[in-house]
Length: 292
Image 1 (cartoon, one colour):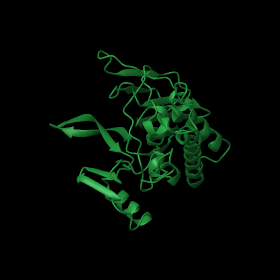
Image 2 (cartoon, helix red, strand yellow):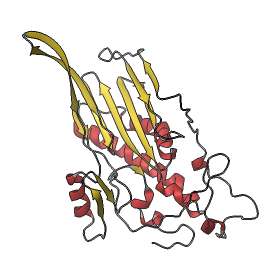
Image 3 (cartoon, one colour):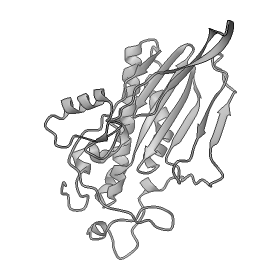
Image 4 (cartoon, one colour):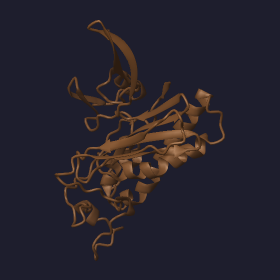
């Protein structure tokens, strides 16, 4: 059992955020005043919603507190059941999950979105295929090679997200650069378990054993955390940020010991998306081309 290191550290940078609190009848964002002044945008007709925003939006009702699903039709004899439950903390829900099998692997993944559901949705549809393409026909017992291939799949997913937001961002839809997602991806083959982590979702392994209690032998379940948080409150992540971005002003901003933020903006230090904290292209005004 091992944990594959998460990828895509959120780099610190000065950035400018377009203020956008408006939405239309579909619940989708509308461009800012700065966008409407952009000569690239045809202001004689209502602005077109970029395809990046047009995804399936999972609405919930107050009576729908949780949604659970599972499958027991598995070919892996070491796995009897796999499933997932989601709790609607946002409406529309920003999170996604997938689970199933391919070849001799069983997989389960959580995509914890923030700033919108778009990156979580995109990754939930594409990341599995990218991983499958990378690890097909390799010696899965070679842990170093397996790590490299899974990390490469995460990097490919990040590039696909960046490619998807470039056009709407430069057309004035600045908030596409603020959408991101954590990813926790578990892969199991026989007795081998691989955890790919990017963000601060938790992977917990349950195991059983026996204890002596009140002079009797009793069964007990033991939870074991098997990954670490990529969160700015973690000292190791703070050290990595300071090493990679020396002399960066306001690199780490802490409200208290439990709530620290990269550039005062995001608690995560690794994620998919969140382009405004990673790439200079996305931390300026998309209309005026100025950094803030």
